[in-house]
Image 1 (tube, one colour):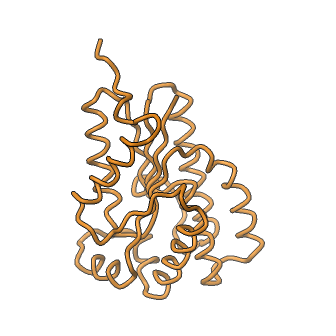
Image 2 (cartoon, rainbow, N blue to C red):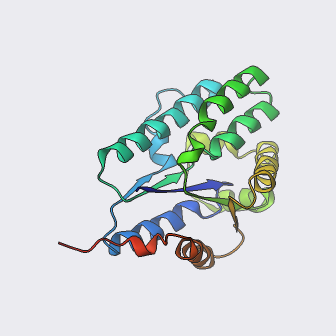
Length: 209
């Protein structure tokens, strides 16, 4: 059985940092881990974010492709998605809210990607208020085309509203993470959740040959 963990939520909420720590810890327990990272996916898309609907379709389709490549290879015990099938809900709805796509396009995308959400074993939703997200972005020296598109106060506010809606709609299946906390505190919450589950992820460690 392959365990699938998805990290979704607001930018600059600590997802990538927590994923790096978690992947290292699971690897130290002899678990074979594949991380499908959003920043890596971005570099593999040939069109820019200004293409809106086409860009988002290509992004989440690339996530889908890399996910099934990893799963069907039989080479991994754990697959970690840094923005995956649950996250597609918020992004397409936000594009609709900002009138970047039509309601027909949004419905098509949601109907298509919804079938893959059942693949996710443990989804973690990171929430930070738009003002904090914007401040953290201004203090960071990282840059990508997608970030420049997303980091307007209007876009962040609409994205935040979508995540709040998701936290209510998918409660208690989604574990909501307070992105205001330190990376160490967030990591502890994630690890406790994974360790307390019916089949502990940390209890899956493979015996070295």
